[in-house]
Image (tube, rainbow, N blue to C red):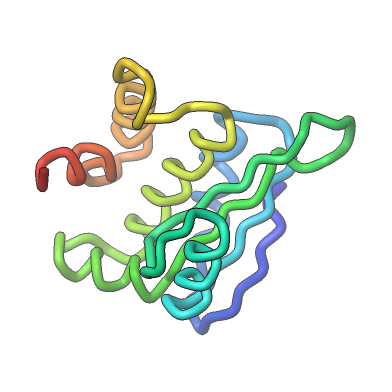
Length: 141
């Protein structure tokens, strides 16, 4: 189950997000949908980066009945990227949710040998989503 805290006017496609989550875990997930100002502050406090970002993940200790962790998505940032790439906002949020969820599950594209990229690509194909976040990021480097 996904527990959503929505600080925006966006209405997420909860069916799609629940289906994605169920594909990867049976643990609960906390999802916060926010704006650039709030995620910028979180990014500054948690990562020392004073800039908005698209998605942050905060895994929790594996404790019985505790959620897997928290995913924070800036709907404002996602809307800009959706417009830039010609995606729907629902698709962009789903891509970010997958990316954040994979981080909660221990994947790390900055240190692995492509495992996260491959898993992300597998999931976006399965759910008929557009190009993955990692692929887009690698393409801009």
